[in-house]
Length: 249
Image (cartoon, rainbow, N blue to C red; front, side):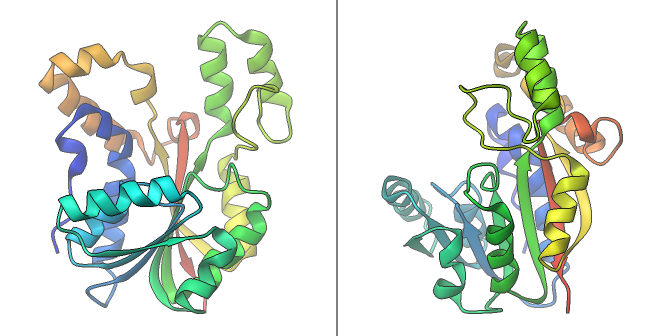
């Protein structure tokens, strides 16, 4: 199966370029095909639909009925066969059974759930031994930098010192992670980190108008994000952190 390159069709999708590259490369190395994929909190199917269109057996579990309705419409429009189930992280094993899947996606979920450790434990429980977890979470360092660049220096200082990396009462995220804390969270659930990438090291700092009008700049930004994603110190300044981890055992 060829790796999808959806971020090459519209500048906004450069935001997911790093995750797509790392995820599809890791999936291609797994021994079985098609793969059984579970997308926890997959929403409207930004990852699920392209993976299903490639022939993988994809189930999306999401708490929002509106998102699932949009997902099903999108899947029908693109000829992708997948399963949509309303639920949350605690329901994963009930949906697919213990050790029932090859790959679990858990993208932009840990920063909003009540108990991230319990959520990651269910991700691990749903995976077969040796299965792959793709986890994306908000990076606390990026919140400090972004608030400072916006001239909100008190909020930047709050995010710097807050135990959960929050900048104030108006912050929509319950928590953010640094690389060490995120890897440790996964390790406690039996998920061994193999790769950690920074997602959107530069993209959120670039004016969208530039990329809308300059295809060469868009392509250059994609290349830059891919090149910087695994390098310090750039990785630790990215808006999000992406961890590819393997279930032990």
